[in-house]
View 1 (cartoon, protein in one colour):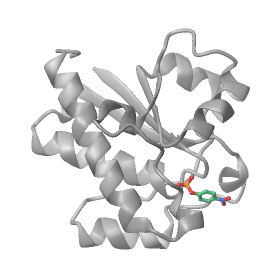
View 2 (cartoon, helix red, strand yellow):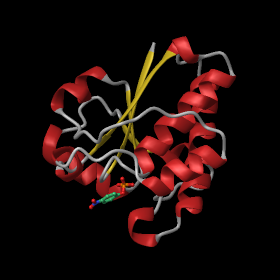
View 3 (tube, rainbow, N blue to C red):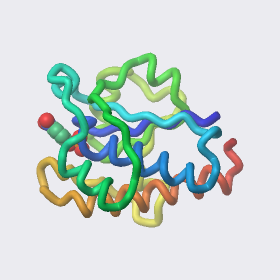
View 4 (tube, rainbow, N blue to C red):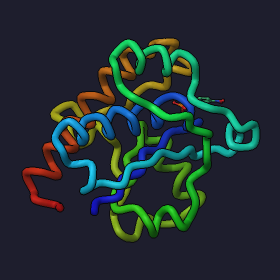
Length: 156
Ligand code: 4NP
C-alpha cells in the first residue's frame, strides 16, 4: 500500500481538495485498496479552531462531482513523516515549514505536487488569491501526473 499525505498551510483549502480529488481518481481506476490517502497542515491555527473544509472548496468539489467527507484540519506530525511514503506539498514554503516540525527529509519523501508534472511550480494559495478554480485545475493536473508516475514506475 502506498501512503500519500497532501500538505498545505491551512489544511482547509488545497490539501483537502487534493486528498478528495486523488481519492476519486484512484477509485475510478479501481486502485483504492492500493492507497492510503490523507491531508494535513503545516500550521496549527485551523486545528485549534477545529476548522473544516472551506466553503468555496466544498462548492467546487460538489460542482465537479467529487465525493468528500467532513474533514477537520490537523497539523502534520513527526509520526506522519514516518508513516507516509509520499508527502506532497503545494508550494516551496510548505517544505520549509514541514522541516521546522520534522527537522530533516532524511528519506526524500517530500515533493511539490507539480514536480511530477511537465510544469513544476507552486500551487498558489486560493485563501489569499481568491482563485479556487486555478488551484483546482493545478491540483487535478498534479494528481494525474503523480498517479502516472506511480503506475509507470510500478511503485505498488
Ligand atoms: P490552504 O489555505 O493552505 O490551501 O488550506 C489556507 C487556509 C487558511 C489559512 C491559510 C491558508 N489561514 O491562515 O487560516
